[in-house]
Image (cartoon, rainbow, N blue to C red; front, side):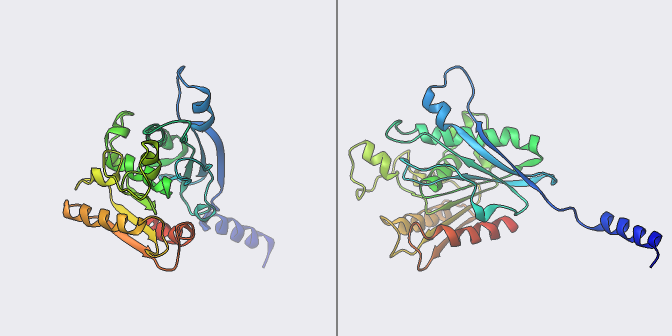
Length: 265
């Protein structure tokens, strides 16, 4: 093969071969602005964003860490990297330094930031999925179902493409009950419970839990009841997955497989 033909073949191959997707990360972006931010808000109200650089109109997953609303640190889950979508990992203020609903409001402010800014990075604001593990799953559900949190930032919660909580609490979170002096084994369903905000017009909801015999504090049963009540309300796109053999902490790894399958649909 002469050199000219080889050069032509190389050029043609380069033109028809798909470009390799590269990713970049930007860390510690503040999702709150203004003069009224205290030191703790400046410390905690920030996010990291992991973005495909040479794709347009990509999906974005907003990820809230767990930790019982008292601990935890944002990080981009390894299982969600290199999958042709963006990931936004969010920090939020924690109890007991703040009380409810400060951390829920932080979650809403972060998701609103994504809606208002993701197009600058090439993402599609119509393709935003909100997820998280444990306390993070609780926050995802609260801002996706109680519309007033996102409405305060000019965003309709129904614009969320999907809600995918991993082992999220569906009754009032046990840390909020603790703030009120209520035992974690005493169930409460009030305005701080996703169950309080069931509605037929909510975004598609995929509930994932660990094994009912291994989960903490009836977490599977809460999610099963949530699934049933959403369906009875007329919601057509609620699903429930129980991951047999996995406890509360261990269920996250196989749950990522389900999240990836959901994102591929």
